[in-house]
Image 1 (cartoon, helix red, strand yellow):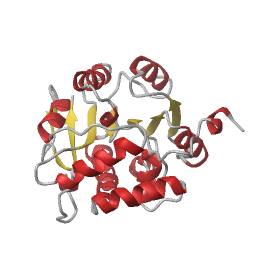
Image 2 (cartoon, rainbow, N blue to C red):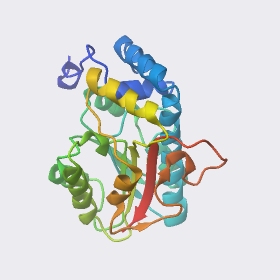
Image 3 (cartoon, rainbow, N blue to C red):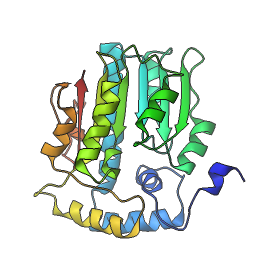
Image 4 (cartoon, rainbow, N blue to C red):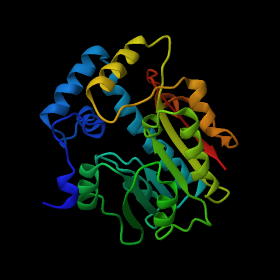
Length: 260
């Protein structure tokens, strides 16, 4: 058994594996499926959130690669591999795109190294690090990415795991401060909203039974992550409403893209 495999805990549900279950993946365990079903009973639309966030990722990456010309992507909080992973979307547009995935979940790392293989023209790398390890992430990512050129910083559903508001904002600022002008922040975050009380109940259940615990924030608080950046239209909105190909219902996962 490798060091990474020895760190995999199948006794408690884990957010990456439940997310994988909700999006139709197979990299999960009975404990994850049971928790996922109980959360879905509290909030039947939760599986739609996971899928909407994944579709938002694809639209944002395609926009940055096609329209903006971004060729470097730093994805922190990768999650388990599934269809249309970020490097696949980016390298379909630009085969020479470089992607660095960062996660601290051992199951994610084990699968990423086996399955996330990029194009011969580009490059794909993987880092075992926590979002809070900003200096370590930048130092290691700089071996694959040229940080003097624009980078797309992808933070999809990951700052929710930093409970303290000011710490979470500081982490995002430190990461963006280290990137070149023309870099973009792509961020999504679960929100609390008066019109969606069942979301709060689902989050409360998760925080009692699952790991790691997550923090909801209001849409206005999510917008603060983009302070000092030029927000692309339509701003910080439900991720299903960010430049959709067809109208879809709003979900309690808000997202935006901002340019430095």
